[in-house]
Length: 130
Ligand SMILES: [Zn+2]
Ligand SMILES: [Zn+2]
Picture 1: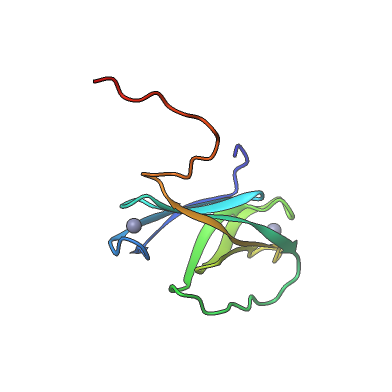
Picture 2: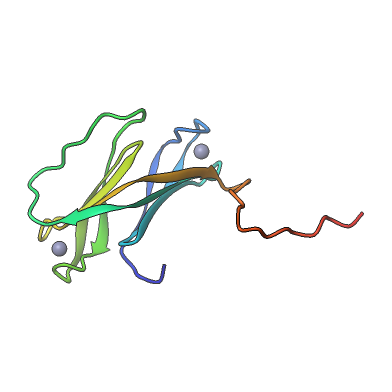
């Protein structure tokens, strides 16, 4: 994830641990993620489609509150670094360039807790020595 796009924080109540804590939000064109700074709960979103010229974002109501966030990002479409409107819900994540209207749509791909990440890489770590 060397590409720089969106990197911001949103202070709100975590849907999982219930703490009011910074939720760290990162997005590049290939992936977006939201990580709770208190419990480490992570949500990974993958792109669904991209579009231009959409005047509004219709958003189904999910299980959690919808977050409306403004964050600076670099738009690859108009090549301007400026404000983007982020809309993050339980199952989707969208970013929209305020300059040209270019929109990324992501959908929820997986959800895990950082303390016990999904490990299906086949990598077995050595047991701790006594
Ligand atoms: Zn949390
Ligand atoms: Zn743009």
